[in-house]
Structures are given as structure tokens and as C-alpha cells.
Image (cartoon, rainbow, N blue to C red; front, side, top):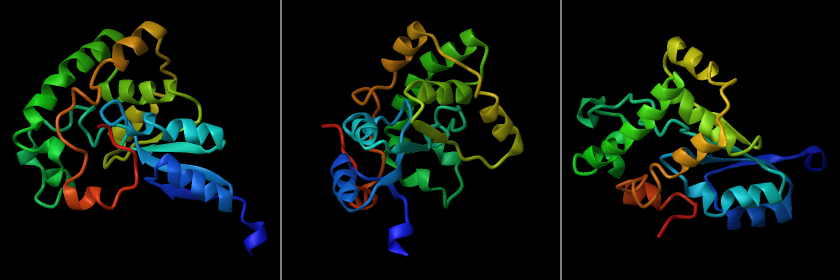
Length: 189
């Protein structure tokens, strides 16, 4: 019954697409990749979500394991792991990206938290309307992620993190060409 539907969710959309969808029906949530390592929603989507009173569900808030320090060598990933086809994880780009992780890990150590917890706290500090959904394959990692809930970052720490892993520092696109053609999000120049 069309009249009883209150909201629908959209996934990986641009601010423009969200605007068009809103003319048809209220949108409760938009899902988009968002982390310290992937900041595309900051271009226009976060603002559009706030104007529409729409939650942003941030998938891959740990940068596909990168921010948790889970990938020391992409060659060690399973053959069917999608990260093997992602330019940021390529043999050419990954060492450069890995060098960006050291400062982030230092901040986590200074705060006596795990890097994954710091990554989740950074996202939550971006606003209560941003909901990180970390994926995990282990109960231990799930518990670590849940333990990040009470962590609050002060303004100085946020400022320090905000200048790490900026789009001009991260090397490589999020997706390969074929996959990127399927994604409707704003991209940095």
C-alpha cells in the first residue's frame, strides 16, 4: 500500500540523486562508503542528507580493514577478496597508502584505544545523523567495535585526524573502472 510506506533507503547515491528521490518520497536513510580514508560524502551528500533529515549509514567505516591495520599486504588476501581489484590496494598504491596509517595508529596509541575504535569515534564525531556499520567476521572484532561507543574525541584530536588521509593524500580510486561506473556518488577532482 503506497500511502502507508513512510520511507525508503537508498545506497551509494549522490546528493543530486537524493534530491530527486525526495521529490517522490521521504528518504529515511542513505548508505554510502564513508571513513577517514574515504571522504566522498563530505563533498555534498552529508549536507544533502541533513537538509532532508535523512540518516547517512556509513558502510566500510574501517576503510575495508585498512584503518584497523588488518591488511599489511594485499597479496595475502584471499583470491576472491574484492579488495584485490581495488586500486587503493594495488601493489603500486598500497605501500604509499600504508605510510599514511602510521600517524593514525600513533593517535590511537596515545588515546590507548585500538585503531578501529578511533576510526569509529571519528565518524560518530561527524554527527549523530551518521551511523557507522562496521562489518566483521569475528566476535572479538565485534566486541572491539562495540567498545568504541563511549569514546569521545576532543576538538584537538578531531582536528589532528581531519588532516590525515585527505583525498589528496590517499593514492588510488576506491573502485576499478567497471565498478566505479556503477556508483552514483560525487568524486574528488
